Image (cartoon, rainbow, N blue to C red; front, side, top):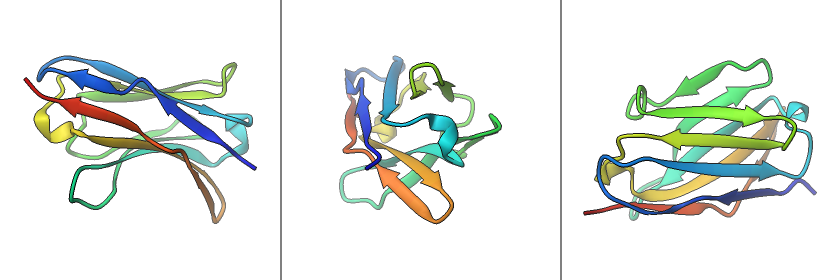
Length: 115
């Protein structure tokens, strides 16, 4: 069973940075892509960023220029570097690994941006 474990969430002030991690129990190159999604209170889960097996990255318009997704295959870990955080970035951040029609989710890590 594939397991994803997110970590690194916390409370930061607007304008600050935070880096969250997603450790995957298998070689991340086994998956077509690994993505970050988030769910704010009272809202639906939304796509944030993804990186595919070839290294191509995609971002939601709301985070372009502020967030960077990266990976370390030696650690089977995908990261999300978040800069210039805003109150609207407050959410639980989930990692998702995709292979063909199968999707695996982590339990999420909470990010709160408040002054």
